[in-house]
Length: 548
Ligand SMILES: Nc1ncnc2c1ncn2[C@@H]1O[C@H](COP(=O)(O)OP(=O)(O)OP(=O)(O)O)[C@@H](O)[C@H]1O
Ligand SMILES: [Mg+2]
Image (cartoon, rainbow, N blue to C red; front, side, top):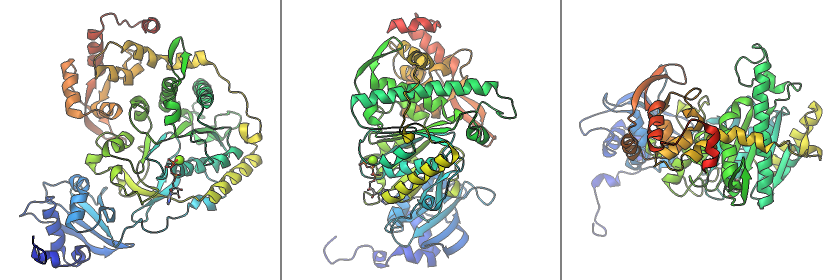
């Protein structure tokens, strides 16, 4: 195009973001330009455009053959067709009785919704908090509150430096701190001042990045493995009224006689201990401290939440070499602030989340504290989405210190101040042998996977005792494996079928109990494949250790 010569005529029609609200034809054109509907297809207006917050909202029905999920996935194409930045465009599927798979709610902000000062955390004004209530976490682009459940789930926070990992992690911790019936283990491997204020409430506290600190963390984890086992043992002896399932309840957690408070282990910059190469021996095996910590954390993330012990991990390096895939798979809640590319984003949020429209590498560097939250099952995100972009509440240093002091006072009043916070941190009750046995099912399988080809080795490693012929699982959804191993679906399916494992369909109950068709693998097929490759591999797990 020559200088001064106008391009297509309607390029001069002015900002479309404003005009489309007046003239739905522009909206339809944008859907066509973004190839979300065909040239001869239209949209049905369900609700006229209305002002909502600092933007316009409109709800439309797609033609019968089109799906809202595809619009969500191609949000940037639609944003570009509407001539707005994609941070300004929110697309949600309308769920529930008024909704269906082809009904889309759009909201377009007048301006960059994050170009405003962040909101202060409401926790500053809370005299105390109940850890069983989801903690206020932040606000979405439309300024709707987003919360984060803290019990029965663990959290992974990942991002490149200086984007707000520590701030996000401290919000989750603040919910715990303001409930005097919780116990905190805080390990800051950045070795800075970020967590210092928590010393007044923490049962255990460390700040440093030396091999010594890594070994201290190992002792904590070993202690926690023992603690979780002891909780399950004690839960079995409780009557059904107190403990209806093998799962902690609010009453149990607050009963000081039972001594099972909700316990959180917060580790900032968890990649430091996980990458530590100090050689150690555990359960007769030689391995690095980092590898052993990975195993202990995986065991805890899997077993501990139901016993009331949760993990809150923040990392700068979310790659699978640093965070074992088995560990990532069992951390139920994920929060990804800005990362370098979509692969890193998927590693934090889960396989293929970028293709569903959730890619943390598209977040802007200037938007500190803005990230994508993929909460565990029961969380309520606005619009009932799989994941939400949210800006965390801002908790300034002074507010953080105030909350910690309040937590200290609450614990003093309730008589629940323990450990480091009392100036008298007890020596960890550690029994390395028991912990090694506890996690050994996993390591035995790991030892046994040495000669296996991929992806079988990773599958066996991830499933570990889930493969056990008696108390293991019978069916593993493909999606779970892809997510855990961060595998590419087509290649994974091909390699699995090379080993004689072909997927089958099963009806399994959804979160809300409705049965759903799911593709997956029979455990017996996987076992057969493993045994085919390892004629010597016996079920006698005791002997596996020696093979290493
Ligand atoms: N919700 C928020 N709103 C506005 N600014 C924020 C928010 N969260 C964090 N920030 C800003 O981002 C800066 C970096 O945050 P934080 O220290 O949590 O990052 P980090 O990812 O932990 O960095 P590092 O890798 O250096 O530890 C903070 O100093 C803070 O000013
Ligand atoms: Mg930090």
